[in-house]
Structure formats: structure tokens, C-alpha cells
Length: 603
Image 1 (cartoon, one colour):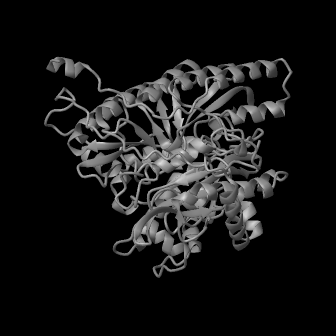
Image 2: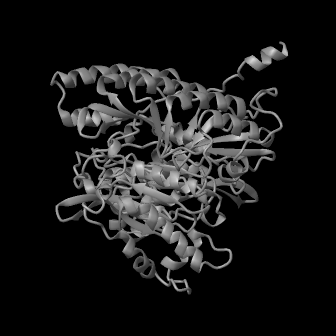
Image 3: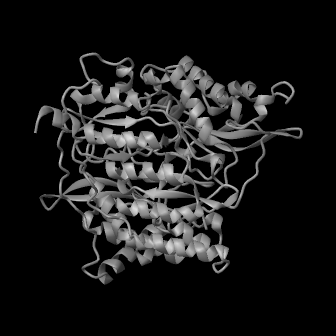
């Protein structure tokens, strides 16, 4: 093979070892849609069927759906990305959306075309089965699992095994409500205390030999009423992982509230029963499961190591000796050193999780050419992680990302806010949280706030309603949408909270005040100004706000009431004659209203 052949031939693609799909489900979905259109399938039954297969309702219409593609443990491969790019152009709106739960969503798909998407996904081993509905949702795993310097072992194989065990499993098809697993690498990453089952890998010395296991948290979750999870026990050995998971799910299935849709998540059961009683019930149920399950009922954990092979490339026009403008800023705010020497994980900044079909197609090529593991991981913050990028290749990678419009800086800072889909597609949304997140990102990058070390570990998260798809409850600065009124004129409004966090000191944010949509950016900038005026040496915005909300600050700002007092003049609404734009939500040129449809979160 000649040098020119090497230059023109793309690297071999790594492909998923797990096929999550079943092609017959596409055929079954097509037949069921036809029966529904003919009036032979009642609406409630069809809704449950549709959700079980991962097709969510779209705002104010029954003719379109959102297809939610599951990426177990966040893993996605180049051939899968190319297929999703193609499906997006053929059947969706020419773009896709990365969610906060490591799913990839295609919006505004004609109902009759959903089965065609299922067929295309099956070709590359992907499925949307149980991405919605009352089942085990996508099993998440930190994108840094396997490369995090602080982890004790890689939990990714366990996340994949858990996802495989519960997918299409009869015990998980008709739960009282959705059920979520989060695996992570360490205390800092992974949000394990705000899901039904959260797991941190641990190694303990038992009888003189190291034993793998997990620190397990149960009963957390975000929503209209949020709760922080409880630690089940000091250490759960790996052989008890599946027994514990089955036990918790059986208790929820048996005792969860199936009648009151507003209170049928497991966190309400734990809260109503009391943690100690629930904990003891788990121990007893686990003993029953351990004694009665067949020996063949076990997790199929694949410990085969991934092949790490740096792609073979030669110097080309995108390389050279010059470092592109903005490289240092991007390197600082979008990459982290791995535990493996000479490698970094690179996080690609998206605008509220959105990526175009052409960018997806280019991304597949980028992964082949720069990731030594040959795949990507979706993150918890609506972004994408390319891992095992050799440090020598980073300038070339940045140049390539500039070409395809994926080189924005700030991925790991508060300048990359989370914004759920909001009124762009969701039936329950009250505000366009999606567009607001983009407006904040554009403004803050313009101000170069991503370069401010004091703001790097803070977060902004926005939900279009109280249901927390944007995870506002665990944000340094969080917002959820609603409406405000001056006389007969309405405007988009947000309830703002501060002090939330999802690390080892997980806590829910404290309510501060209501902020009109068009005043959100000035209010955040004012909070940063207040922080700068009162911070101590070594403070970040996150640590300073944490001190304030816990009543431990001794500056001029001693409580959130002091912050509220300073902010109140900024949120006074003008009349519609004084500022007509104030009464338009972001992305809208018509008067604001709070019209909603029937939600399907609990269907």
C-alpha cells in the first residue's frame, strides 16, 4: 500500500459488539399504526404501545412523534452516527438532539415514518425500545468511566450488562412509572443521587483480596417534587448488583402508586414509607431474590478490554505547524486529561444538545480519525465526548472541528447551559427553554466567560416546566418555566433557584425569585458581579453560592435574601407599550401564552 493509499483510505470503523435491535419491532409498529389510523386500536392503548417502543408525542399534534434512540452507557459508533444522520435528513428535520440522559432524539417525525426509522436503526444495532414509557429507561454511565483518574474501576461493562438484562425483560414492561439507572466513575461525576438507582464503583479488601462492588444510592429523582437518594449500605459486592436491582424493582412494582400519576415515581414511595423501612425491605427482598432466582439469571458482564489503537494518519492540509486561533481557549475548556498518559477526552460543545445531519456525518469521520477507541460517548450535559485522543493530535482535531462547526469552546463550563426541548416540541412546556439556553451560551461566549476560572465548575440548567427534564434542581443557577402577567398581557417567566449540585455534596437548589425570560441573562450577570464583589481567595461561583445558601457566608451577602434584594429591581416588568419585545418568548414573534397539551411522562 502506498502513502497516497494511506491518505485516501479511511481508518477501519470499530463497531458495537452488542446488537440492541429487533427488526420485527419495526414491522409490528407499522402494522399497529395502520390499525390505529383505521380506528381498530384505541388511543390510550396505542399511546402506551408507542411509548414502549420509544416514540414520544409531539406538541399539539397526533400526526408526528419524537423518536428517542437509546445509547446504553452513552456509547455510539461511527456507522451508527452516519445512519442517524441519514435518517434525520430523510424522516426528521435535518438535525438531532442529544438529551441529558444519553439519548439521541429525532423530532417531528411523521407517525407513519417512525417504523422506517426503526428499520434504519436496526441495521446498525440501535433501538428506541423502552426509551419512553413505564419501563427501565436508558441505562446511563459517565462518559469519563474508564478514563477518570479518580475511579477505582470502569463501571461501563456493568452499565451495558444491566441495560442488556432489563431491555424487553417482562419484569420491566409495566412498572408504575419510569425507572432509571446511573452508573458513574467517581463522586464528582454521574449524578448518582438523583435517580432511582445510582452506582459508584468501589474496591474493598475482603479476606485479604480486593473485591469489586458498588456504593448504591436509591430513591433520588428530579421533578415537580425532587429528592436526593439514600445510600443503601456501605458496600455492595458485584455479585449482589443484579439481586439488588431486581429487589428494588420488584418492591417498586408491587408497592408503587399506580393511581396517582403525580406521585408514582419510586422516590415518592421511599419518602412516604421512610428510608429505614424501605432499606430493610430491600434487604429482605434481596435475600428472597438471591434464594429463588435461577443460577442462569445473572449479568453478562463483558470484561474484554477495548482495543486502543491510535489511528494511522499522515500530515495533511489541516495539520501543519501553526496552531489555529482559539486553540488554547478550546483546549482549556473542552478537554480533560485521562488516567492514561498522553491521552485526553475531548467534549464537543453543542447548542442545547442540537447537531445538524451534516455535522453528524462529519462527526463519524472525526471519530474514526482521532479517537483511539473508535467510538464516542454522549455526556450528561447534552454534549459528546471523544476519548483517547492523543495529545499530539489535538491541534489537528481542533482544526477539523472548526471546519465542521463543532469547535465552540466552553463545553465544561457554565457557558454551555442545559436547555430541555421546551415549547419547540414538548406538550407540557410553558416556555422556550431550549432557545433561552442557546441565547445564554452565545452571549456568555461573546463575553468570554468560559475563560474565567471562577465560573468553570458552575452550571446553568433550564427546564420549560417544573418537571425537570433540564435538571434545574441540581444547577448552580437553575430555572423552570411558567407565565407572568401584567394586566391582560402575559410574558414568559422562570422560577429561579441557586445552590444545586450533583457531586458528593448533592443538594437541591433553593428557590430565589421569578425572573422574566428577557431578564434571565442580566440577572445571571448580576449574580456573577455580586459574587466577584464578595468572593474570598480561592472561591468559585459554585463554592461561594454553596456557602451563601447554607448560611455560612460572612461578607455583605449573608443569605439568599440579600441576593434577592439586589436582583429585584432587574425583574420589574415594563408595560407592553414600553417594551413590546419583553412580552415575546425567545424564538417567537407572537404574543406569549401558556397553552399546553397532554403530557406523556406518565402515560
